[in-house]
Structures are given as structure tokens and as C-alpha cells.
Amino acid sequence: MRFRIDLKIFIFLIIFYFTKQIELYAFIMFFAFIHELGHLTAGLIMGMKPEKIELMPFGFSISFKISVKEYNKKIKKGNMLEIKKIIVAMAGPITNFIIILITDRLNLDIIKSITIIYTNFLIMIFNLLPIYPLDGGRILKGILHINLGKRGAEKYINVISKIVVLTIIAISSILILYIHNIAIFLIDIYLLYLMVKEDLKYKKRRYIYKKVLENGII
Image: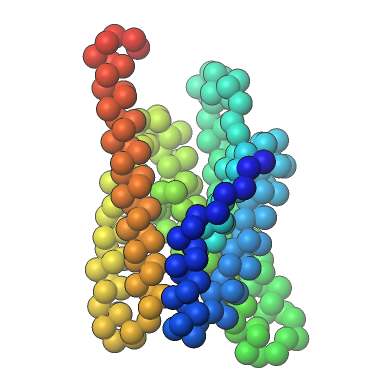
């Protein structure tokens, strides 16, 4: 399994350090790692082989290697791959929810308890946003894939991701004026980066589909 570090994380570390929010950032990264272990565990249970884990500015990302035979199954059985992906995507937020429930029942220091619950709630809600490649986007894309096929799923998840990201940026821009929290601004930048990156990938795939059809390959 390959491991990669997104170097932008060092910029975020410096910003959170000088804004005196490094402790919160450390909590987020720690529980984001636990979140990713949830994905890993679910993937292994589903018989999927981990291929790469990446350390990113707001957590970790793990990808699984999909064998060719999984793609070559008949349509009904092929949907099982999407169901597996949906379950793996759900495992991360579920892990954070379990941590919240356990923490609520433990006799911890009130400040520590609130911090753990707050951090895991943020990670859970953030990842459930219907923005690809966040968990919520992966879940929605899997559902769309089962009902509309691969190209339909890619088309609609691309549009939905853009709408959600731009809506969040618009709302949070107003909040920043009142709260003056650098973390909100950084999250906006990160979501915008994800949106642009995935949109470029989608346009590239759409161009390939178009060329394939024009040349009568399929």
C-alpha cells in the first residue's frame, strides 16, 4: 500500500499554529485518522484491497484497488461493487458517530468530552456533505450509479457538488464577517479546490467518452 503526503498540509499547520488553533487542528487530524480506519476496516471486510492512503490538509483519504473482474460482472452483480463502495463510504461517518456515543457515556472531563464530541461531529457532518469525493458524495454517486449508470452518475454528482460547494461558500462568507474564524475560510478554499479538481477530471472523462463514441469503438 502506497502512502502520500499532500504538501499543502504544512501551510495549514503554519496557519493554525499562528492563529492559536493548533490544538483543535490536532484533534481533527487524530479523529480523521480514526475515521479513515473505519473505511479501511469496512473495505477489508468487503474483501477490498487497500491501494493508497493519503495525508491531506483536513484528514486522510484511503483508496482501494478494484479488480478487473469486479467491473466485468453482469449488470445486477456489477451493482454489488457500488453497494460495497457505499458501505465503505458510510463506515467513516458511522465511526465518528460511535465515538460520539461512547464519549457521551464515559465519565470524562467536561471540556475534553465536549471537544471530542464537537470534533467528531464536525468530521461526520463535513464528510456527509454531498460533494464528491467526500463520503456523502461517494454515497450519492453510488446510488446514482445503480439507478442511472456510470455516465449519468458522474454528470449529476458533478452538478450537485458544484451547487453545494458554492452554496456553502456563499453562506460561510457571511459567517466569516461576524465570526472571523480562519478555519471556515480554509475549509471554503479546500472545498473549492476539491470542486475544481474533480470538475477537471469529469471534463477529461467526458471528452474521452465523446471521442470513443465518435470513433465508433462502443
